[in-house]
Image (cartoon, rainbow, N blue to C red; front, side, top):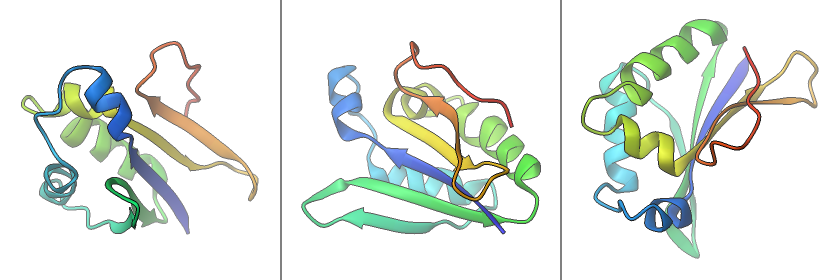
Length: 110
């Protein structure tokens, strides 16, 4: 089983000047595409969350996230500007960076 993690970075959201959405909005958006994440909250910073999605079909999950979450007309740009999305790579101890709020970061392909 593979895990894809969407990590909300509140400092990126406020730095970009667009704090119009919340972590709960992100959770609702992910659920709206038929995905039900395990939600990990940082007790000290409740807006800092990780949405963990587990699957046997990682390419299908990533396509759903790209189309339904990152491509959402209302929230997609906010999600792109305020999250980091990573997933497990082929090796057990490797991670792939699929999306990052900092456009200067080099991304991996799935």
